Length: 323
Image (cartoon, rainbow, N blue to C red):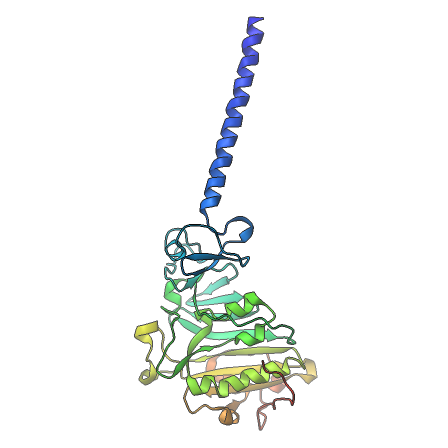
């Protein structure tokens, strides 16, 4: 009887110890989770608004921690390779949807809705690509520019602040063409998609190419491929010290519509100068073949269309809503 009693008592003690350990683990996890801003269903940190954490589900965290200090400290997460240094900067926005593929100095950045190829040696993009589909959205443009927390610091500009000196923060992929998705339209404001563009060019000839895409995407799905001609003109490299980036000499863009025998393309090389106004866009028309020879890129256009150069840029259809 005595042996059975002690055996029973020992089994009960084991159960009590196991339950105690499980309780401690549960409390520890709950405490850890409570100390991690935007954890669980909130989906992680999207960005900071002052000291507040804004979560990926759009809510704000109740955490009493200071968001800027937290993002800049040891808690900041990144998809970048652990061997690369990552940025610690209050202009950084934590993101969850940058897929990165590296080839030498070039990072291929797959954002929601578009792709940018980033040259680490230049801290700027060399190419971009996206499909412009029928306009079915009206998401608002994100009002801030920011560094990408997933991209190594040495591969992007040192700040997302305005350039000044009559240069805009010019989009390679414009926000308006991705307005069906709040996530995608926000991603276009990554500094990896931004480069110095002369004010008149950004709001003139370059803007007109964007308006052509905006209107014709309601007629056909379009493939848009473009990029940068960096050149070697130190006279306008105003932002090397402030942003770590040179000023490109020109930008190129190809719009492709139709398939098979109906495939058509239009291409421009737009100089990055104050003279590149809307009225001069036709002066910058080139063939796809010319762009391939200058840049070394292979543009996905049928061979018969690579030699075509229209006498004028595609007209904006009457009644097109460019907004």
